[in-house]
Length: 190
Image (cartoon, rainbow, N blue to C red; front, side, top):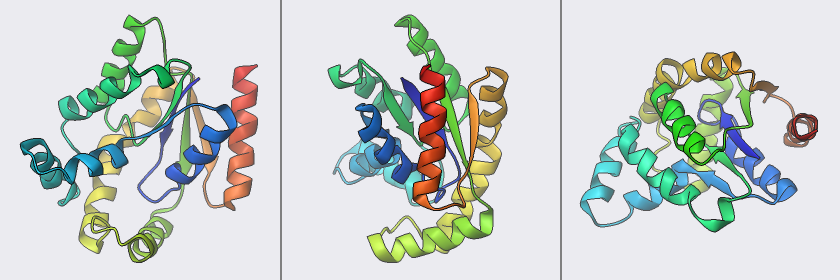
């Protein structure tokens, strides 16, 4: 199965993807982690990624697609994967659909973790302290949320129109959220 997680920063996509990865036995592909790893490299590409991450902007579609397509070509992704933080724009979703269609594959399901904005800010500020994440400052949090609501939220309609969207209440306990996700995945797999 190929599953896309959508949700604003701090909604819990990473936590739930890791749990679902163990359940399904497929890789968890976090574009955020891949971009942060690239950012740490002393290279032109690393500096380009840093420029975007440090200001809360999305990395350009061409850059993200290059990183993602290289990753999903690897043998461990043959049976599927969980996309965490990708796609983030309609263009990325269309490019992913085209890439997968060339391989006679598709996105099977899209999970939207819904969490109110006030809670998201609280979670990200807490995460910044716990994980020492330099990209979780009040200014970058505001910028990332604005980017999500203007550029990523339209994906909900894109995938709903394809009949692939499942909205999950992300305000419950992580165990309750995961059980809801697990049941929906099992129902989708048939």
